[in-house]
Image (tube, rainbow, N blue to C red):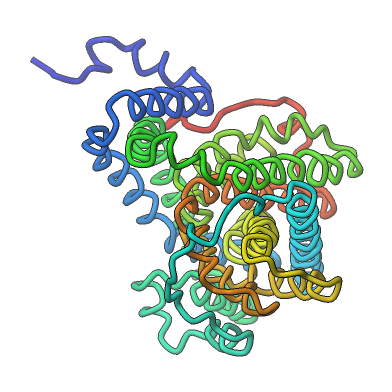
Length: 425
């Protein structure tokens, strides 16, 4: 007798797929939080389920970034178009990042978060040395593309994919076969992505249960104001900066936020911009109507160079550390923080915890004690949830605006407000 559940009950899988993915993920978040708080450290037993989901996501990162970027570049056979898209993308990323840092600094100043946090809370740490700007730029060039793929060096994979895409375009007829092969491979990778995303609610439930059970509410209380500042800043930036930009472009911001809800939920739980990339690309194409060429170029690039949430977090934390140690920052220091954090955010890898390394660079730039990193490290996971979510939302916003400006946004799909992500069909 067949043990296929869907065969015995054909409507079961259909009813599950009929529920919007963001609702299933939200349910996983809430249930995971409840389980974690009720069972405490014992909830860590569920972590392997979440780890399996993360492993599936990580499995997709390199092939998805590589194939999507090659297809994105080869679809732009007009060099002028590729130049326009590239300039628009980088310009939007840099502007929104600088604004995010300014919001973080403003909130840090107004809330005066360091008041009442004594030096006894700090423990000396030895953070990893932050790379120089020159080193970060040189590190973009892959000496061995295969090694870059095997080690997950996404920045180098991006550079190689862009160069390979350009070479295919310049190869004329000889490049057509390669281009067609990549287009077919992209469809296969997208189908594999849909399969992995289908399991997101279960992975999210397990990860949230582990997080809540491990850290509990006690972790939130000592540094509650820092957490409040980062979360409020991310919300303000998303709804006013991103929402305002979309409204100015003639697009309904509410439909945008509805369309990327699934990606935001996955980002909040996994704390990985790169790990959320498969969901972001699916949301952009199916829910927002962004063309394959634009989403395939803008989103993989944004997952590694657009870090608005990380930049905002660095502004808040720099002010907090200054207040804790009683260091007065001048107007010039504020400008230095904005410039340094903007450049540092570009080099921040889209993986959990990388923001702490860049924070050490920002603190050093204005002479703040690196011991301040120890204070932030305790709640970094909770802050990472908010900043990663903003990073992912920002990537999708830029992709939407660029697609709109290039006439490659399907307004019918965008305005329909459909949620079709998560179905394997």
